[in-house]
Image (cartoon, rainbow, N blue to C red; front, side, top):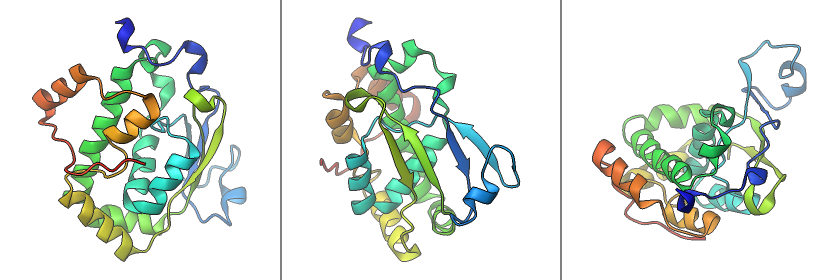
Length: 204
């Protein structure tokens, strides 16, 4: 399994860097989003960031705001504290997460696109996320794109037509990890989930 290793234990994102997740108007965040006053839906997590750096996130945000916002939501559904260092060190784990996101994007652009667009357009939040690999210890700020509903709708339609994400795909994975997807994981997803890749996968 040595071929499956991707990070040494010292390059795993610090699990001490919890992200405050609180949906509110940014002007109210200091008042309502803190560890003492928990008026709103509040929790902490160490989200999955696809191991992308700030420039990569910014590129996705500029070109594909629906995909960008969807990726933030997707990442916040996971807490890296649930996984052992041994799991986080594996290419197969990160391949799985990228494939999961493709299925997530296919589903939300097709069946739940309108519902998700409404949710993304009305919410504003920022998250400070720790990322690793080449930029060990770097903290990046992520916020929803605040794109208009028509822009998000057009992006969602494009994602649906493309059968998945344009930006966060195998090309991005290769840019981040320096190699293609773990093929055993891809085969498993094809057999178990009928995974099919996006039609077009643009690189940076």
